[in-house]
Image (cartoon, rainbow, N blue to C red; front, top):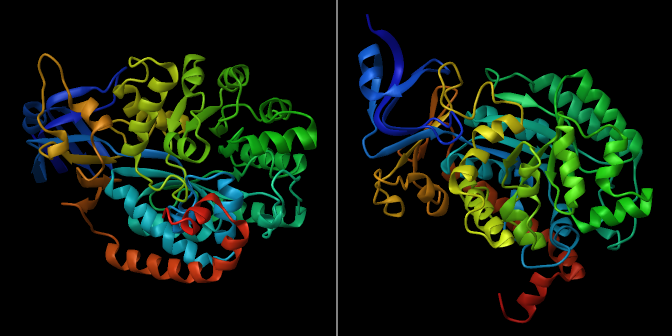
Length: 477
């Protein structure tokens, strides 16, 4: 007797991401019931076993797990494209805008970024920003899966006035207020929206808060049994601050505090030495690698291969739109592979299948959700995407003697090939149309917010005199 499913996608190429590679099923099908994957396998087997209210013909399509963006700051995406091609991108590019932006305006930018991600196949966002108690409402409304944290630091709002290279001033009262917001986020949102929303703690970095507050955050992560999402060795400015304040580099300092364990999601490791990178991996913390962002804002390739070779668990993230310009995981997969080939002067390293795993199943492990997402497996959450293989950028398809689908996904796809997005068993986007929010209204709202920010930020941008501002003055932009 046939078992009832809600939805079956059949006759498709299916990447399960099970096993050591991509788990390709060439004439495959996925059956969905409720919020779970009922079964995955060959089309003939699935259609013989299950009946469904709706059967989608996947001929010429690819079905795969939704992509995971393991590190994103959606609230600063309202400054998209304002801080690249320059030195001191944060101090001179980001902070002059940020100080002139309201929470409502940040929210407008956040929604557009979430829409951008979903349209490019991202189903899970590890969002890490200020005002997360409000940003998280976007994820609930859109229907996405999110692992969210409030950014916690002790930096005053006018930190942009602090001369580059001087020690940051700390405001403990401000730090406690932000930590209280993070606790409230956890208590009000953890497990909400059928479990799609889960919460972490988000200290911004070891250079941006006192030892006492860092230890308080660690104790809270243990109390609430969750993870810590934190920038670690993210730039030379961080190392400079740490050495001046403590006489130690970030990673040895964090190791002494007991921070380097499986609760820690260490973002970037840009300035980590080989020995420090190996230590983070050995201690069991995961690494989140943001290839596009760090390549653009720092001109560097973080030690992701050293970390993986040391046995570490890693993921990819898009980071931020001011100085990466997009939050698109296809972009990150491509950059990750190419930049590391160049760094090692070896075209064989960082193959396409590795990039794809680092945006799906390996990412799920790195953020602690591998029991629910990251691969297409019976019983896991039904988070999956359908791509059109007849798109010019993915055509033609070869299956014998070599399959070219995965290399083309990583090196050619742009995200616009994603036709359908299913999260928690619900169709969120179909035929490239979002079904849960008004995309045009969101874009209009973000543009109106940007126009206001531009006017208010003018004098601060002129005073910062960034490289990009000078390019405008010199007629290059």
